[in-house]
Every structure is written in structure tokens, then in C-alpha cells.
Amino acid sequence: MKRILYFAVVLLLALAACKKDPVKVSVTGITLSPTFITLAPGESKMLSATLEPSGASNKSVSWTTDNASVATVSGGEVKAVGIGSATITATSDDGGFTATCAVTVSKTPVTAIDLSPTSLTLNIGETVVVTATLTPSDATDKTISWAVAPKDVVTFAGEGGGLSREFKAVAEGSAVITAFALGGSSLIKAECNVTVKKAIPAGAVDLGLKVYWAECNLGASSPEGYGDYYAWGEIEAKTDYSWDSYKWCNGAFNKLTKYCPANMKTYWDGVGTPDGKLVLDPEDDAAHAVLKGNWHIPTQKEWQELGKCEWTWTTQNGVNGVRVKGKNGNSIFLPASGFRKDSSSPQYVGTIGYYWSSSLRDDVPDKAWNWYLKEGSFKDNNGDRCNGYPVRGVYAATE
Image (tube, rainbow, N blue to C red):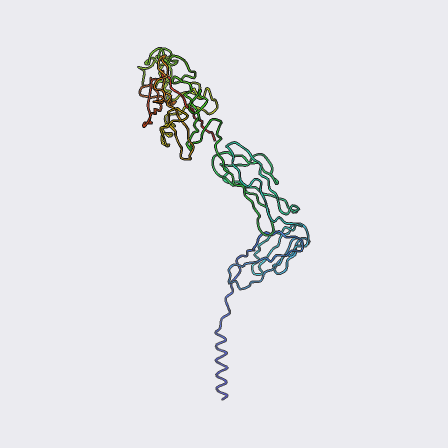
């Protein structure tokens, strides 16, 4: 029996000698959650420290505060004791890694923000002041941070900040203005949604196109009015529409003095070489001369864009013409106002309409492009520059 006990003891001693010490896993980092909190005096908040890696052998953490008169800490629990700021630090006993949490102690933290307005629509170039109201009204820390995105639609205007901030609309589109405040352990925020549109001047209609179209012909007081008749490149109505009276020639179609491509010398009778101008200069554009600003006679491409809308031959207040309806549901009326040639009265009134573009026909420079309309036909056309056609202006919004 003694021999059995002896061998058992020897075996246990041998097994103990073979057993290795456990492998130590060192701490490599520490994080805190949350990393900032706002408390009222007497309030408490538990912080959570996470060691890396999760299987670290020594999980002990030491807690300290840099301002015990504001906040104390014990085992990760932070208690607010006075007004002010403090930093709580968690330090791993293994490796001395640290993480911090910023503590603000105020008598009354912010619980909500209200913005006025909460949504608005601006024209490009307009400014607006957005004001923040804090709840409760006696919150100790009234610091507000402002943000706006995207800044290429709406941007900050003026200086400063505080509870009110000025913003400016700079481009067409949508943007969000946001106000932030620190409340408790999270950010409090409120938003104002902004829609920016191009400014629409009086007398213009938005058809959802690149330019706005005038409600009436130049010189007319209603959409059904025929208005005045203009030779291409002239800014005043007259009684004779012939080459003899045309401003930009020396009495004949092939003696042009302005607006002629360089390779069309047989049409030129001006000083020097043909000028190569293919679109009316502003000073020769009747719509710009009369209406000013960004108004002009439509280019051929702008007429072609209008041509993609819905065109319906109709009668409005007893006048024949076309109703042009954009995809946005808005529409304009183009009366069949005919045209004038030589010294005659307007021809084909009520049957046909001709409307000038500002674009020269570059292969036959005694003619310019216009838009032709009659019942069942709406298309590009061209005519002698000396003819008298109505003008329907367009307005180009600038950004």
C-alpha cells in the first residue's frame, strides 16, 4: 500500500512539473463611450471603457478627473457637482493607455431646438435670416453651431453666428440648413429645408425650359395681341419693310454691312471684311432694347426647345394661334399674326405666324431663322432679314 501511495505522489509531482504558466495577453488600447456628456448638477452618467483586445489578461482601469469641483468619477460613474467643464480620463493598468470624455455641467441643458422658418423658397440672389429657439429658454449653454449643404446652392452670408444666421441662395436646387447644440450626452439638431429657384420676372412664364418665355408679343398688351413688327436686327417698328429701308445693308440683299460670315464675301458691302457675326448683338436685339435686363429674342435652339413642348392650334378670345404647353403644365399663346413686307399691311393674319429668332442663316446671310406656325404645322423657317415679323422675348436667368 505504501508503494502505491509513493508512486501516486511521484506521478502528481511529475504532472505538475510539466504544466506551463498561462500566456499573458497585453492591453493595446482603450476607448470610452460616450466621449462627451452634458449634465446638470447632481446628475450622474455611467461611462463604458472598452479595452483592446477583448481578451486582455488585465482588465483593470483607473479613473481620474481633472476638475473634481465640476465632476467626480468612481468606477466609471461620473457625477456632476458644480458648473463648468471637466475631463474624465480612463487609464488601463496594463500599458497605461488612456481615453477621455469631455464633461460639461450646466444648470439647465438644451433639450430641443426649433428653427424659424423650417422651410422656405428663395430666388437666386436672395438672402434670409434663420433663427434658432432653444428649449428650455433658460438653458445655461446657448452655444449654437450652424451648417448648410450643399454650399453651391445655399451659402453663409455676412459675419457672426449666435441664435440667428444669414444665408444666401446662389444656385437653383435644394439645400438643408442645420443648427446644432450640445444637450446631455448627444447632439440636438433642427433643420430648415430650402428650395432655390431662378427669379421669374414680371411678364414671363416658366415652361420648365432653359429660358422663360414672355406672355405677350413685343408691343402687345395681351397674349392675343399681335404687337409690333420688326426687321431682323432693328429695334424699332416702321412702315416700310424692304431692302431699301433695311438698316444693315446698302439698299440690296447682297450689300450687307453687318452680320455676314467671313466666307460670304459676295453678300458684303460693308467696310473691310465680313464680320462673322451669327447672332444679334444686344444693341440690335429688339426684345433686349425694349425689355432690358436679361431679355432677348430667342435663338434658333431656344425655339427648337420650345418646339418639343405640346403645340395645339386653337382660338383664344377670338384670335387664332397656338397654345404651347410645357411639361410643368404652364402654357403660352402665340397668335397667328402674319408678317409685313414692303409697305403693305400685315399679311396672312389669323392664318400664319412668323416669329424671329436671333440666329442668322449662315449659308444665306441675307436671311435669318424664324419659327413658322399654322394649323397642323409648327417648324423652323427662314426669311428675308428686311421682312417685318413679331418678336416673342425670352428671359435668361443668371446664377
